Image 1: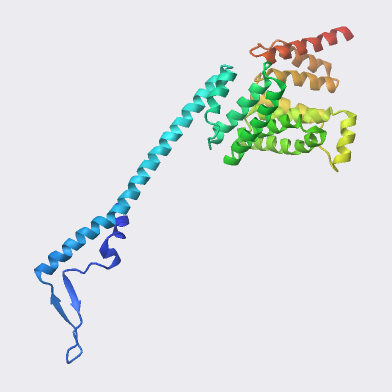
Image 2: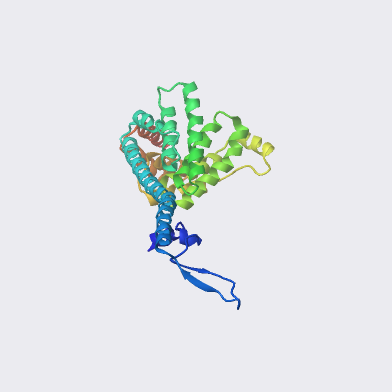
Amino acid sequence: MALAARLWRFLPWGRRIFPGPWLSRGVAGSRGLCCTRRLRGSEVMENLGAFKRSLLFSALPYLGFEAYQVFSQAAMVHATAKVEEILEQADYLYESGETEKLYQLLTQYKESEDAELLWRLARASRDIAQLSGTSEEEKKLLIYEALEYAKRALEKNESSFAAHKWYAICISDVGDYEGIKAKIANAYIIKEHFEKAIELNPKDATSIHLMGIWCYTFAEMPWYQRRIAKVLFATPPSSTYEEALGYFHRAEQVDPNFYSKNLLLLGKTYLKLHNKKLAAFWLMKAKDYPAHTEEDKQIQTEAAQLLTGFSDKN
């Protein structure tokens, strides 16, 4: 019925072109009345032939449009399935620690319009930049490349918590190349996007942890940087160790033991707050954390050194 209804407007009678077998013709009679005349058989056959031709040519554009819709939908389904397959491969490589293979996979789709693919490419570019074998020149190029991918991901989907998170991370990285003024100015943007990521996904421990790092960084900002910040900005960004501690604990509540660095920073924050007992508790957890990555090993070493410092002072 829906097809018939849509087809109706393409048919000749829908446009009042085709006359039926009965045709009323007004004939001026002596009394001004109209009379009707029945069409002859030949006229009916001619009109039926015209109708068939008209129906055929009128239906062709519609059928072509319907075919276009069918093929377009099929193409979209195929494209979606392909993206899902790529994302699945990418996540497997990421979890396996195959940084270079992941980057090679995703760069094949760097012109993609898919936000989920783009933020993963931003992450992969950044991870390649962090590798010890990456030169300083190449690292800088990769950091800016990562920011561009993250920015595009955010433009494609502002509701993606991961796009907000990685955009903030990449802006922070770029700040290392753009001076103290740009770094402080970017701090407001970074905070805004971390907060948005948390709002969109309150269960993402990493976003919460990163917000804690933001607070910790500005809580321990050296006095000379504070002075520069006050000169450059009327209200420079600021925070406290208590605020940072709140985010680190919140991240741990959402996903216990998810990240060795969160354990380390809980210990270091308690040290800043002069609570050695709780500092030792979290530093011990960081030291005993299973080392899956090079970063985990570095954190184990730092936690052990801090704990040794405890012993020496006692």
